Length: 457
Image (cartoon, rainbow, N blue to C red; front, side, top):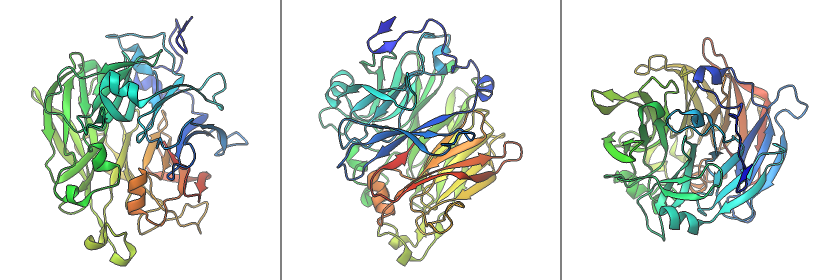
């Protein structure tokens, strides 16, 4: 039976898991889907397929490539149409299938629906949702983050419709027809800036973070706005069922751009982590824990990462006056067992691993250096190849034994911090899940020196 372009299932997808514990025991991934974008916008962006099976003769190689139909999309984040949240008892949709990639263009406001069946190595574009449909039905533009929820596809967006700077917010798409249902918010309260969203499903709590409006981000960091403390610096808590704003928690305006949200996977826990890109007071980066405080929510800074001193002659123009490289925490990720938190320091070229068994007191257990504004640390498999960029987008395998990182952030930011070119590379790291620690896999490292085709997760 079909609905639109999608196949309706009457038994749960076998890749759905009712608990994090069961998800950890899932079979290892065989393929990885990666976004590649062309900074010059002279050719289309693409979804690239990599072989991740260590027993395959194609291990670490590109085995599929799907060009998008237009140029200038700037792919950034993307996600599945459905996942284990479909098993949520409050809004069950066990018939949906984890099959379609929902791939938004951050610059174009186009949304691409890509079918990974019947051949996962040759995904096919089955639908393109134009910017006018997103604007008309939801009132948003500049789609960013995709999460599959129990009642639909949740899509965060940075801008408003018809050229409006904001407010940004969340659009909801249908699981199977992919039609834009509308804006999620029934009462947004003081929320205006937008970025990421996540939730505590069993507690009917949604959390959102802040970056900036389209004009604040599309040409890179604007120094006057950063020093004026005008980028986002708060996170928001919502009633997930009623779609009402509950509470704004300000981290303090020195802590600019709290971006990625990572709630505990354990449904009985009421905490999560948010990474903050930069402090305007000392260029440090930080990670904060949100948690219950009686009937309200609070945040506590649990990780501080200082800037690294550097010779101004080695720095891009944006950083020369400061004589230091900020870590620039641009992504974080949490293992499914809630044991390890991974923190990308894109500026200094480092991926850090923390044991967060005690969430209020993380302990660093691992670190790998690759790239960096000044260091340009090489990968062990190519010791003579100085790398630009740094660990940026991070993906952790379900069993927690593998971590994948790519090096590009956002075209305009790439240009500012790596003005001689960020290149394009992607690496896999092996994890010691007992004691902690990270080791680069010398068999799995992809690099391109072309100015375009930058890989992102």
